[in-house]
Image (cartoon, rainbow, N blue to C red; front, side, top):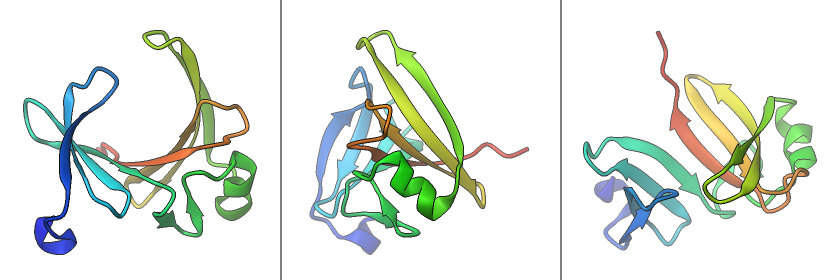
Length: 118
């Protein structure tokens, strides 16, 4: 990763309870690793990172116009007392999740994870 993206990054705690380690690049990518295994768990992308013409910060209807419906759901995060709304797209074994605290997706963020395939 460092060979590809360079050595200008910061290391910080990430996750709801700061239980993971993140390597964050100025480009807007943050690679999150499990604290106890150092297994890459996800990649969070700022608005500067594009996926098939979409990016974090777009509203859900804008994302749907480009990628189609995807899988829509929401869940209540009781630890922080708010609802997360999400649109999920699985393409070639990779899960692209657009998350927002707003039902219309305003101020969304893109999180990329690998799916567990049988």
